[in-house]
Image 1 (cartoon, rainbow, N blue to C red):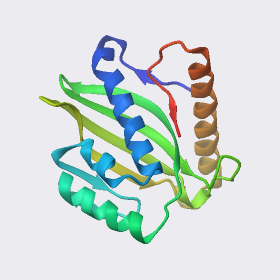
Image 2 (image 1 turned 135 degrees about the horizontal axis):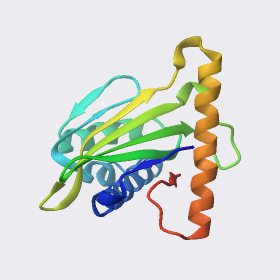
Image 3 (image 1 turned 90 degrees about the vertical axis):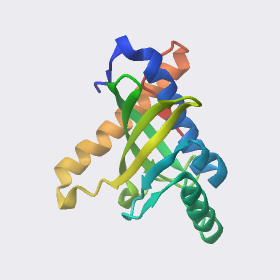
Length: 174
């Protein structure tokens, strides 16, 4: 699995991986406050079902309602690519799945491609946009299997990188 990382911009990209890890952790712990604090004031999310929420306070309020009405499954995510768009603007791409517990199976209907656009502000790196798109692959079983294989390969590769304790840009998040 090829991980696209621009090593010349690691001083920008490292904090973006950390920001993504915090985002996934906030979702997995159902912490609307921590999730929304990662966004710039005019940041926005586009959820799995297409719901668009704009503004940090609106994101916080929306997720408080979501988390109070349901118990969304936690994400297991594998950041795959990161690149600088320009100085102070970095994009990250990831594959994500949802499953119940460490020993549970992934729910294939909840596979997702996640995209994050971040900006460097006076308060540090903030999320401008987080988009969570279903990876349904519309009945193409071969393409879907390739997607799942890439997801699992990235998770395994990233777990091995974490275990080796060598600093790397691409990593899995759960």
